[in-house]
Length: 611
Image (cartoon, rainbow, N blue to C red; front, side, top):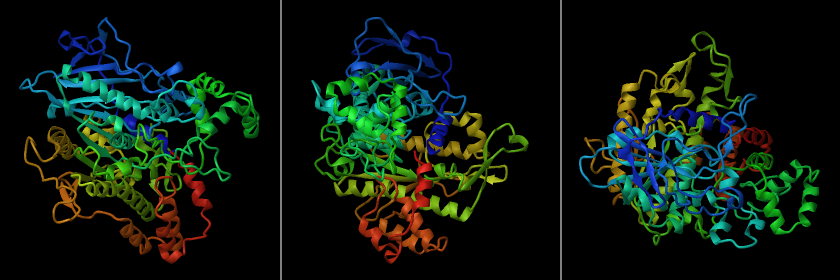
């Protein structure tokens, strides 16, 4: 269910390109061959430039290889297919899958004319979508490029089990340490950054001033690049938006699930079992295990590579364990440090780059809004009757707000405040934010500020405001607050671009804006910037940083819950792998009264919400 709302958020950002024509002034020569693009207003755009060979056939589950050079001019006018993934909605009439394994392409957006010949900062966007959905083509950075005078590169990377997959059989035979890592999606982002280093000067960009930025899974992938020795020197600044910093378990990635079916990572071994059952080679798991015992590693590898992309994703879905979180990188020790992302952030010996990190105030409302236990959905009437299904009412507003509040605060703690503290521990200067804009309209007597507020991914509309012109976004999100939203969008893009130029979001702004404080100055106080429109509180500094202790104390005393409600809330908030709190904190919460309780009902609900 939650995956569908992620897909909807992605869809709302999409703005189809106009029919493009070749413009000779966009002829460029890359290290692999010549390309030509188009002009779109005051911009030059190149779409669908390959940065690696297609990862198909024998190259499936291998580190990406450089593109095969070409001699004829490549016409770069059309977006490449998204990487293979589940279809957006998977309804009765929709294709359950979309995209293609041949997907390692990037898009470049640059100002056609600049005031000087000086090379421009480069911002490389890594899309989100739980590392299972999404596309480089979804995002239109034209405002950022045109008004802030930067070059934006949007990149693709392999998704789901094509992007992160470890199985012992794939390490048999001639392989490299990168092949064996299982971090193919991460390696794709590194390959794209290498392409940028080697070629972006031809497009007017400065290869010595590259900022990586991404949201949600894209933010996680930005953090993974900070933890990758192979990415060292390929970028110079990083922006992490609503990203998590936990990593997957190497052992769980290759092992049978325990008897209770709980695992934080989808196992390649369990996927293999499901493929054998689907193909009729085995009747059940026991039969699949017996069959595998008689196969060599090369036979297993050949069998896996012979599978269609659809078969693999169907098997992945069938192999989903209980308690699994989003697809995350593996701390293999080669592509990603063995001490993971957090270890890298805390390491003072790591190459330091300026970092900007933040979350949205109401992150989890995007997912809670789709929960039928929390929100009633149905057929609207009146002006909206042409829509098949809409949210009609929040069933228990106080409970809905409380669960959204704690879920979002836990997200901020893990993805912003603890990250900033880790960076400060390694004597790193960091800038942090919270996005608070929530001026949504009321539709069918339902206040969307209450339903969604400053939900997950909402800030993307302000960084990529071409999406605001779409009817759905204009009606359901922006409402009557377009003017104030546009001002906030301008301010945010100014901050992001100033950071890309200088490493400090306060330097080089085109007009005065509120000062963005460093997370921890000499006085030791933790500060972050609240991003909101001037119709509300505006942009302001806050010292309301979160700690696990403060969150647990607040929950223990919250009058909106009884004791069992507090216990269930904490259980649900820490259910997913990577979200767990220290066992001692759980044992002492509410004086230990939450231990040894039955959480089966909560577990069943959480499993239905899996994404």
